[in-house]
Amino acid sequence: MKAFKLLVVFLFFFASCGTENNSSSHSVSKAEDYDLSQTQTSQDGLFEVTYTTTPNPLPLNDYFDMAVTLTEAEVSTDELVLGVDAKMPEHNHGMNVLPEFEMGGRGKLAAKGMLFHMPGHWEITVQVTRGETSDSVIFNVYLEP
Image (cartoon, rainbow, N blue to C red):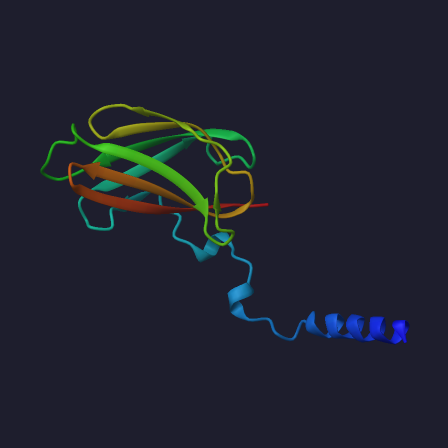
């Protein structure tokens, strides 16, 4: 009787692991699925943000530095606060390290010691704050396995 119960549990588990339900929500992403541009206009249209990395292309599971440059049409960039964060949205986690940030003045920021520990789709968010006004840009990055 014990063997019969074990067989039923095994068959139930095996049946639930079938490959017929391949919905697109479980598909594996590829670099071609994303806009990988390194210059974008912020979500509210207040700034243009560009980033570069050293080294380029980005390494997998090794440290890199990121330079962020911000421009705006009419207002000085002197009193801005810039922040950078990165996450893997499909895995719901961020980086395992906390980079060091260095403001360069006039809308420049250096993030040193960033690290993407997994291949796949990453999002780099650059947050721009001046007083009560806040705006952001999300850059897509894809690291090949």
